[in-house]
Length: 149
Image (cartoon, rainbow, N blue to C red; front, side):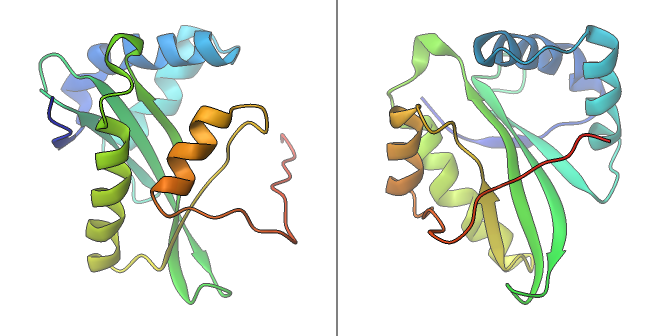
């Protein structure tokens, strides 16, 4: 299996929608198809706030990763957030996510990103082990907090 990455474009929307729908169902994220499409399309059309990569073959992707970008004074410049990463259940455990999370940050640092962040369910020990193994570390003094607007 290859964790080759392909920058997703608008013509990838249908393939991506099925993957995102599967991930959201697995995670209990409630969002209708129109909301999901409206959230994905600007990223596929090239807005500067983020991007989506398909993992594996473009015609039959194994998964996807969504990155969003921001600015951090603390980290000294542009930073990124892994908003979602998903690998099809049938092929998990083969090192694909590990490869993506090892290689993509290297490429992003060469593009000027100074830090990459993510959040993980406190009860998801499998994902926590993956993230620790790929260099992500919990921040002892901080926790992510959100306010829906």
